[in-house]
Image (spheres, rainbow, N blue to C red):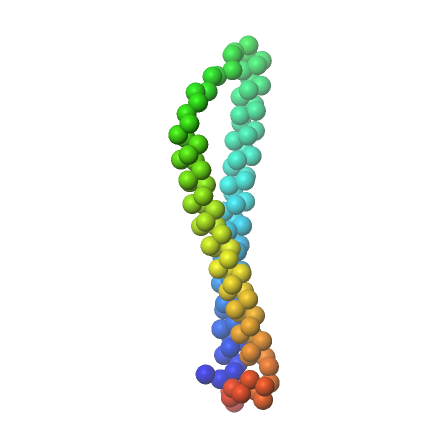
Amino acid sequence: MCQQWFSVVGLASDIVGVILIVYEWHIMFWRHYHRRLDDIDAHYEKLRRKADGEAEPVEEDNWSMGKHMWMGLREDIVYRAKLAYVGVALLLFGFVLQLIGALPSDITGLKSCG
Protein backbone atom coordinates (compact mmCIF):
# COMPACT_ATOMS: atom_id res chain seq x y z
CA MET A 1 0.00 0.00 0.00
CA CYS A 2 1.42 3.37 -0.92
CA GLN A 3 1.64 6.29 1.43
CA GLN A 4 -1.24 8.38 0.07
CA TRP A 5 -3.72 5.64 0.95
CA PHE A 6 -3.02 6.31 4.62
CA SER A 7 -4.55 9.76 4.14
CA VAL A 8 -7.61 8.29 2.43
CA VAL A 9 -8.17 5.71 5.18
CA GLY A 10 -7.56 8.44 7.78
CA LEU A 11 -10.23 10.65 6.24
CA ALA A 12 -12.69 7.75 6.17
CA SER A 13 -11.93 7.05 9.83
CA ASP A 14 -12.49 10.72 10.68
CA ILE A 15 -15.83 10.74 8.87
CA VAL A 16 -17.07 7.63 10.69
CA GLY A 17 -15.87 9.04 14.02
CA VAL A 18 -17.69 12.33 13.50
CA ILE A 19 -20.85 10.50 12.45
CA LEU A 20 -20.78 8.42 15.66
CA ILE A 21 -20.30 11.52 17.81
CA VAL A 22 -23.08 13.39 15.99
CA TYR A 23 -25.39 10.36 16.36
CA GLU A 24 -24.75 10.31 20.11
CA TRP A 25 -25.43 14.05 20.28
CA HIS A 26 -28.63 13.55 18.24
CA ILE A 27 -29.90 10.92 20.69
CA MET A 28 -29.24 13.21 23.65
CA PHE A 29 -30.74 16.27 21.95
CA TRP A 30 -34.07 14.57 21.23
CA ARG A 31 -34.19 13.00 24.69
CA HIS A 32 -33.69 16.45 26.24
CA TYR A 33 -36.28 17.95 23.90
CA HIS A 34 -38.93 15.37 24.82
CA ARG A 35 -38.13 15.64 28.53
CA ARG A 36 -38.64 19.40 28.36
CA LEU A 37 -41.97 18.92 26.57
CA ASP A 38 -43.07 16.45 29.26
CA ASP A 39 -42.08 18.95 31.97
CA ILE A 40 -44.09 21.71 30.27
CA ASP A 41 -47.12 19.41 29.87
CA ALA A 42 -46.92 18.43 33.54
CA HIS A 43 -46.73 22.08 34.56
CA TYR A 44 -49.77 23.03 32.46
CA GLU A 45 -51.67 20.06 33.84
CA LYS A 46 -50.84 21.20 37.38
CA LEU A 47 -52.00 24.75 36.59
CA ARG A 48 -55.21 23.42 35.04
CA ARG A 49 -55.96 21.30 38.12
CA LYS A 50 -55.29 24.28 40.37
CA ALA A 51 -57.58 26.52 38.28
CA ASP A 52 -60.35 23.89 38.30
CA GLY A 53 -59.99 23.36 42.05
CA GLU A 54 -59.03 19.71 41.71
CA ALA A 55 -56.81 18.02 44.23
CA GLU A 56 -53.28 16.99 43.30
CA PRO A 57 -53.05 13.32 42.37
CA VAL A 58 -51.45 11.17 45.04
CA GLU A 59 -48.52 9.21 43.69
CA GLU A 60 -47.90 5.81 45.15
CA ASP A 61 -44.37 5.07 46.25
CA ASN A 62 -43.11 2.14 44.27
CA TRP A 63 -39.59 1.46 45.48
CA SER A 64 -38.80 -1.12 42.82
CA MET A 65 -39.45 1.36 39.99
CA GLY A 66 -36.38 3.37 40.96
CA LYS A 67 -34.20 0.28 40.72
CA HIS A 68 -35.50 -0.59 37.26
CA MET A 69 -35.20 2.96 36.03
CA TRP A 70 -31.61 3.14 37.32
CA MET A 71 -30.74 -0.08 35.46
CA GLY A 72 -32.17 1.34 32.23
CA LEU A 73 -30.34 4.62 32.73
CA ARG A 74 -27.06 2.80 33.36
CA GLU A 75 -27.46 0.74 30.18
CA ASP A 76 -28.19 3.92 28.22
CA ILE A 77 -25.15 5.71 29.64
CA VAL A 78 -22.89 2.77 28.77
CA TYR A 79 -24.26 2.68 25.20
CA ARG A 80 -23.80 6.42 24.70
CA ALA A 81 -20.32 6.37 26.22
CA LYS A 82 -19.30 3.59 23.83
CA LEU A 83 -20.53 5.65 20.88
CA ALA A 84 -18.69 8.75 22.01
CA TYR A 85 -15.41 6.99 22.90
CA VAL A 86 -15.33 4.94 19.70
CA GLY A 87 -16.02 8.13 17.74
CA VAL A 88 -13.17 9.98 19.44
CA ALA A 89 -10.82 7.00 18.98
CA LEU A 90 -11.66 6.89 15.27
CA LEU A 91 -11.00 10.63 14.98
CA LEU A 92 -7.59 10.26 16.61
CA PHE A 93 -6.77 7.18 14.54
CA GLY A 94 -7.76 9.06 11.38
CA PHE A 95 -5.59 12.00 12.39
CA VAL A 96 -2.57 9.73 12.86
CA LEU A 97 -3.17 8.03 9.50
CA GLN A 98 -3.48 11.39 7.75
CA LEU A 99 -0.28 12.50 9.41
CA ILE A 100 1.51 9.37 8.16
CA GLY A 101 0.11 9.98 4.68
CA ALA A 102 1.24 13.60 4.67
CA LEU A 103 4.80 13.08 5.94
CA PRO A 104 7.56 12.80 3.37
CA SER A 105 8.32 9.22 2.33
CA ASP A 106 11.92 9.67 3.52
CA ILE A 107 10.69 9.89 7.12
CA THR A 108 8.09 7.11 7.02
CA GLY A 109 9.99 4.69 4.83
CA LEU A 110 6.84 4.00 2.81
CA LYS A 111 6.80 4.12 -0.98
CA SER A 112 4.99 6.92 -2.69
CA CYS A 113 2.24 6.29 -5.23
CA GLY A 114 3.56 7.38 -8.53
